[in-house]
Image (cartoon, rainbow, N blue to C red; front, side):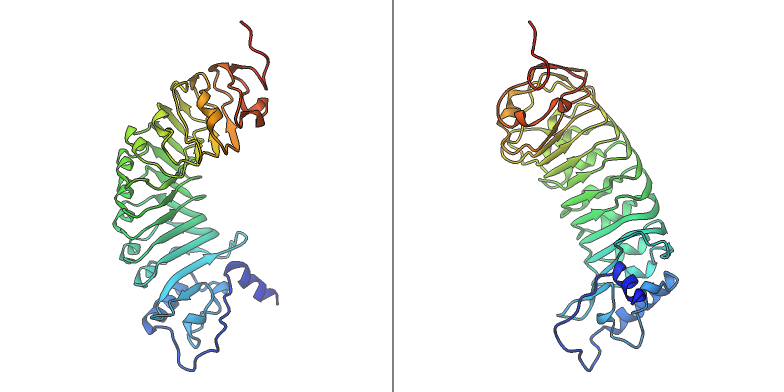
Length: 336
C-alpha cells in the first residue's frame, strides 16, 4: 500500500472506464523511447509501471491520444519534493514526435540544462519545468518551437539573460520565469510579441536596466516584475483602455510621475508599486477602478498629496500607503 501511495504522490492515476483491449494500443516506437527515457533517469521507482510487457498507454505519467494512440503528454509531477529522481532531463524526450505537453514538477535533483533535442518536438504546446535543480541559461533554441503556448520555468536555478528569441513564439500566452537567478535587461524584442502578448511573470530575479518602451504596446492580463533591480519609467504599462488584471512592479527602483497615469476601469484587481522611487500624487482615476482587491503604494517617499476618496480605496488600511508623504484617510489628515 505504501508503495502504491508513493507512486500516486508523483503521478496522477487516470482510470479508464473502458475494458482493456486485447491488442496493445501503444505505438511501438513511443514505447521504445519511453523505456529509454526511463533508463536515462536511472530507472526511478515511480516509473515502475513502465513495464515493457504492459501497454504503455496504461502507464503512469503519460497520456495517449485516443485517435492515434501516440503519446502526447509526459508529466512527472510530485505533490511533494521527491529527492529520489536524479539526473538530467532525458534527451530521448525529443523522440516523441506527437508530444504536446511536457511537465516536470518538484524534482529538486533533476539538474542540468534543457536538452537541445526538445527542438524536435514540433507539436509541443506546453513546457513546464518547475521546482527543480534545473540550471544554466534559458536556451535561445526555445524560440524555434513555434507551437509553444505556455512556458513555465519557475523556481529553478536558471541564470544568465532572458533570450530575445522567445519573442518569436507567435502563440505564446504565458511566460513564467520567476524565482531564478536571471540577470540583464528585459529584451527589447518583447515588445514585438503579438498583441496582447503573454502574461509576464519575471519576479524574484536579478533583472536590471530600464524597460523597453515597446512593452507598452502589449496588453497581457498579468505583469509581475517584482523583486528585481529594474529602473526608470514604467508608466507606459498603464492605460484606461487596457485589460490588465495584475500589475506588480514592487521592490525595484522605478522612478516616474504617477499623477497622470490611468488604469483599466473594469479589469484591474491587483496594483502594487511598493518600495520604488515613484513620485507625484495618487491619481483620481484609481477611484474609478471597480474591482480593486490589492493596492500597495507604500515606501515611495516622494508620493505626496491627498489620497483620493471614493471607489474601492476605502477598503485599504494605512499600510497600503505607509512611508510616503500622502495624507488623508486612512492616514493623518492633510494640513495646509
